[in-house]
Length: 242
Image 1 (cartoon, rainbow, N blue to C red):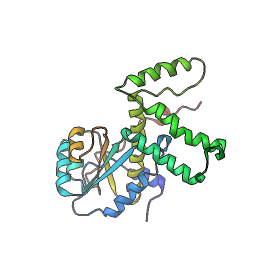
Image 2 (cartoon, rainbow, N blue to C red):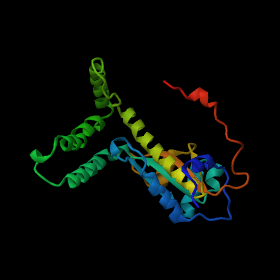
Image 3 (spheres, rainbow, N blue to C red):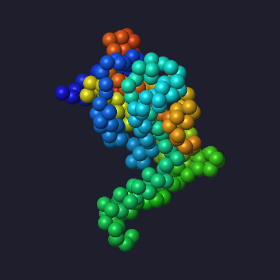
Image 4 (tube, helix red, strand yellow):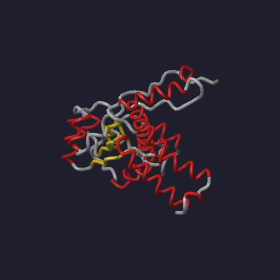
């Protein structure tokens, strides 16, 4: 029986040591990845990819790239969450195709105001925000938007670094969906920041534009798999009612 959302959140811990006597169901893990892609994503661009690693040789190589830490060494499977800001054109085009199919292919003058706005969002606004040449275009846009922002509210995250953050935030949301889904079915995970991301990219044959968001070790926790009780600073320190 699957756990409720609250139960899954409470159950989820970063597990450092996984059992070696119980195998994970590959299809169940895949289903959890399917849940990952239902996460919210900026402008619905879905600038992410998920590499479900089950092959033993690949797992060994990834363990080395993850600095030999136990969460990688004892993992039965791994999921590598990849941020793909470089795919913004392709993803924008996919959204345009989806919207045109939803609205019904018709002459432009027959689109409603709302339909035109949605299509132009991907045809004009997304390219304005995401297009960049050597980081220079982004800074020009940033200065222009900052000047406009003196007179009215405006979106300001237009530099190359800003768009990388946007893509990684979406990938992180998807990763959390995955880990909560794994907890719901009784599986455990450990998101690992400590890795040689260049080596990870080479192992997975990723293009230069791809960026590693995180590597997630997957398994079922051993008795000593969780290193101590959960610690969080007092809720009152992080909660502000305004």
